[in-house]
Length: 493
Image (cartoon, rainbow, N blue to C red):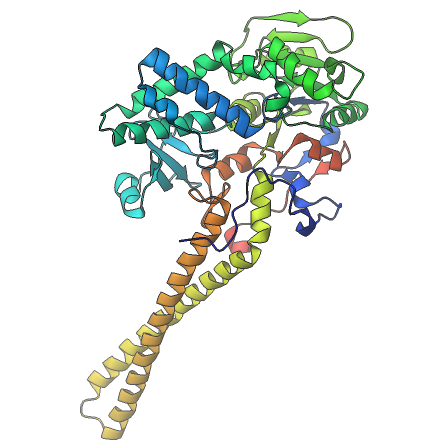
């Protein structure tokens, strides 16, 4: 079915600002910071950041095409895949974050809050409801099992799309392959592309091609330090690569070195192990004047001594639900802020589709009311038929009146059944249109029907605050008290 709502191009980030609702503090929704757990910034002494997709925002089409192409080449050269796979092309609009890969079956899964599969594809072929239910039916998926892999970061998108494409290619050519082996081959080769510097060499040669400009990044980091916060960088990237990215982002329009924006820089952190393993080796890489010292490796306990703050005195910004957000929160109690670039397009679609979403909600309420009325009417019909059966010897006039009421009730019941079917069809159509407005295959990122999606659940439970980009913090005073909305139980609504 063709959606009646336009599906936005992910690259269109600012076209719809005029219609965006404005927060009481004057901040439009796409530029807001959203709060899951109260956060009093006055109590935070140190604010830290991941690098990739947090401070450094990549041009997704460029970086994904690079990773996709290099991995294809390595599969042919090192794992013996046929050269025809070099003709496969990356589709940036198919895979989204929050999915789970069923490595054993070659399926991509979207799950709801309770880890039930609600949408799926085999390779790139969407699975219909009947096939999906036959495979997964009522089983909750235990995503920690080895046969499943979570699509948590933007780095995962090209490898997952390549995996799905290879499954389609193998089946189209009648080649029988182990689905899990295909996944592992792709994983190994993209890891190799990162480890041997293939990807980073391309970025180093022309960072402007791969990085989105961040004109307010320096202003933001300066505002934090002027507000009395220590500012640190904590990244898995190597020191040389960190230098390339931040020199490009922070030194182009400034007369100061990028390290001068920070109090401490930690590279080669190996998160999440950084938050889990004590006494990991580390060493100072750069303690020259002019900026923050650079340390490589180590662990979070040593780091907290270096920075001078501990636990919930530290706020950490990242984009990885597990490596950045969950582990820093659970292991050492840091406060957490999550960067979700997809928020901007999700908010835009929600606002543009508000009328259709309202129609859907009204239709659902009418459907519930019709079902309730239908049940009451069926009960009344049953009562009248019993009364007729008990009054066979009664006066003819009384029987005729009961028969008239019974026939009238039957007509009403038939009308209600028609209305129920009409509303059911309308709900299915509106639901399909609303979902496809967000994403042709997977629907909204944070929701599935009336349930929060697995990804939305992770954001809500793991991140104290979240937003689309770090510079949105400039819309608020440094020591803002971010107050979460009142949470209500269903019976309180």
